Length: 323
Ligand code: SF4
Image (cartoon, rainbow, N blue to C red):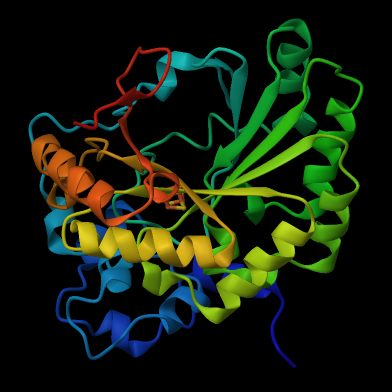
């Protein structure tokens, strides 16, 4: 019998069943895994080409010694989430939208994650059954969109998500639920009947923003999960981060955009790297990102070119940096 998504997630989080290939990889660093645990869901492990030492999926999830380096100019909270936290687990940075830290867990730990140092145990919205967040949203009538982020919000059981949307249902000024998740691609089994049933009956507009950095991540399983989400009524977008050695060429990004489009997802943002401490080896400098983005525009129709943006701490919106 195949394992449930909960079992797969638990195994990934407990570092169980990590195939020997990862632990015995010559670049695997136990010291780096002690700083930020090594988590990789089975769908992503299966997508690694083990014969390719430069595999773009392996690079995103393998803890390596470079992570133990402290680099000047890199920070634990590069986008100033702590400053914008209004109540535990609720970040209100941008007009009309709030972001809820719905979970402290992910089905993969991306080594470049800008929240790799985030104090999840202190700042976690579902604590007290979302009550503090709901009260804040009710009191701020300009909030029309609630964004679930994390960690990955789809690590929560569907009943926990139901609890939130039931509490939001009477709040008339909230029109849209947006979910930021890597899970449909890395743990496709999570997109199960219970989740789809909950999604279909929602009265809110539904947006899901995936996080895919390379076309190799769009496996057959991921594409099947994406199709189910589309059929359940989600508007599907993607955000990527430009990462050294993973997707820092216009050709690779063009393939990603085309593959996303084939799957029914529109490219939305291409993020300039947030300067998070212990991940400086992924950094592509801004001028190089701009040049790559310019080249990308010459390869694709405009609707497949994601916006090149960076997050500037304290700014009221993301800053477009394309040439
Ligand atoms: S899935 Fe998102 S929140 Fe989780 S580790 Fe990756 S980048 Fe960070």
